[in-house]
Length: 320
Ligand SMILES: NC(=O)C1=CN([C@@H]2O[C@H](COP(=O)(O)OP(=O)(O)OC[C@H]3O[C@@H](n4cnc5c(N)ncnc54)[C@H](O)[C@@H]3O)[C@@H](O)[C@H]2O)C=CC1
Ligand SMILES: O=C(CO)COP(=O)(O)O
Image 1 (cartoon, protein in one colour):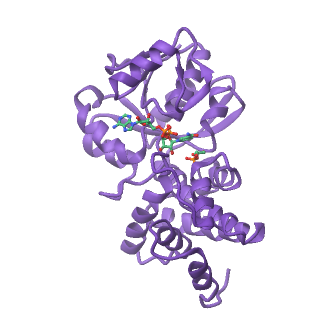
Image 2 (image 1 turned 30 degrees about the vertical axis):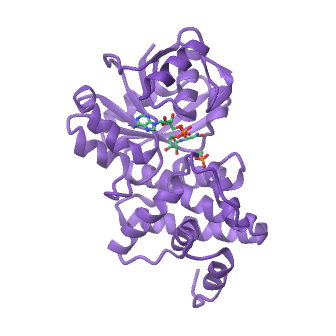
């Protein structure tokens, strides 16, 4: 049995907490809002984010971060991570911190482990990422994910601690590859969603998925990732899930954009933030990423789906 602390009581944090508690681990789910922690504890459900799942009796809910023993899973949205670590650095520095968020910080263009290293220099950073919808994790459906840490020993320990009967973890020391795979696939999923929303067809979606994956790989490799990591669960695996399913919020956001409809602003859509950050990183490396650029322009209202399509189709012909 491992003691697992989960920070962030949204859909994913709650799902992980339920799964690990059902797996016999000692789990505490923390919410940064006292009233939310209270509501979760009283109802033993997360009615807002995961309404169909009841908490196992052994799962603890807290409004204060408890004394940390084992790994700490960071399950807040990416843009909230730096603030969370700044506020709680005295508790969290020196711990095993596993980022579960998928994105790039728009202020600093950092990934999660880069933020962890800057704000909690004595912590051991790791990443849990790959294809998984919260509802399926919570139901204990069979899932395979990537566990990344540049510390090979830490990766082995976490792989053992965080694998369960239904969750199979593959490990890697390529943290930047794992993080960028998870972050950038959201941007591509918005683009593929937009193609479906604009009724350009499934062939257009496949084209964007493939060219988008090429852009994910080129940017990640330029930033130090290994190419093979991007073809794994955390890259191609997660892109396939996210871009092909309307369970995905990034895909649904893209579909709304393609239809010219509005989208609920309170929904976490990581890719719309990551698109802008990815373009900044691409500019630093003189990379041309037309699918990422198109996504950023569409999401920010700088161009319509039809203008973007004309632009993409008019690009000079080239070798694949
Ligand atoms: N929902 C899913 O299926 C999956 C989500 N993820 C990733 O997990 C991350 C979180 O996503 P979800 O849980 O789905 O989002 P969500 O929108 O369901 O929940 C986000 C939660 O974070 C909390 N939060 C906001 N600021 C916070 C802070 N400063 N400190 C602590 N908590 C804070 C919010 O109160 C909310 O409960 C995202 O980066 C997402 O990409 C990864 C895999 C699957
Ligand atoms: O990361 C996810 C699946 O692996 C969840 O995707 P969405 O954030 O688009 O819902």
